[in-house]
Structures are given as C-alpha cells and as structure tokens.
Image (cartoon, rainbow, N blue to C red; front, side, top):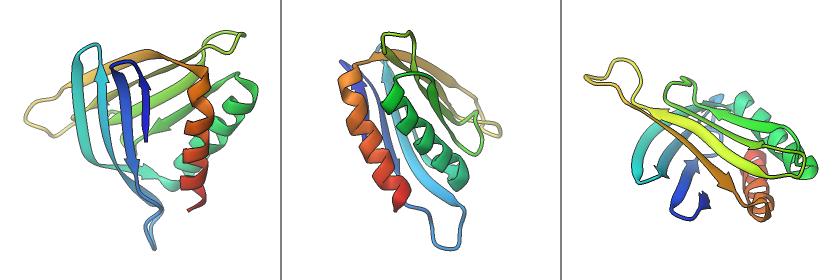
Length: 132
C-alpha cells in the first residue's frame, strides 16, 4: 500500500499475523522532499496494529484525531495519520531509522499533507489486512 502526496510517499508492505505469533512483519519505504529511506524486517505487535486499524477507522469516519503505527522499536518506524484542523485536512508524519546497534545510526523524519479523498482507500486496505 502506498500513501502518497505528489513525490512524497510512505510505502507499507505488512504481512498477515504470523501463525503462532503475536507479530506482523513489514517492509517500509519513505520518500519525502527528495530524501529516501527503506527498511525491511520491521516487526509490529499484533495488538498495536489492531489499535492502529481501529483508530484509522475512527479517523476515516470523523476526520478528527489520529492513528499511529509503530514498530516494536519505535526508533525504527513510527507513522501518524492525523486530522490537522476541524475542516478535516490531513497529514502524514513520522520517522524511520536504523535503530540502535548499527555501526552508524540515522533517522529520516517526514511530514506531508494527505488528500482526504485518499483516506477511504487507506482505511479499507488496513481494515482488510487487520481482519486477515
């Protein structure tokens, strides 16, 4: 799934819940203002993912509040989709990083506006994935 605005995007490839596990595995790509970062083998707690799906559904219905998706280690990936005003304007923000233990550490912070007409597709995709 790609969440985009012009050349800015977040690309998420998140698995279904793994058998016998309470986690999901994901790959993430970010492009924002010409900077790019990619991360494979990112893990998401199933309960946290279900909370993100629920919050996203509420955001889609009310255009108020926010939905946050975080990796097991939030230094590796955090994304927030949020209403920024009462008119229902939206933005996507967050960070993707290398995390501790790497020879070098780096973090890309991102933020871009999201066309509200794209939200129903995002909600539907995450809702379907959460049910799987």
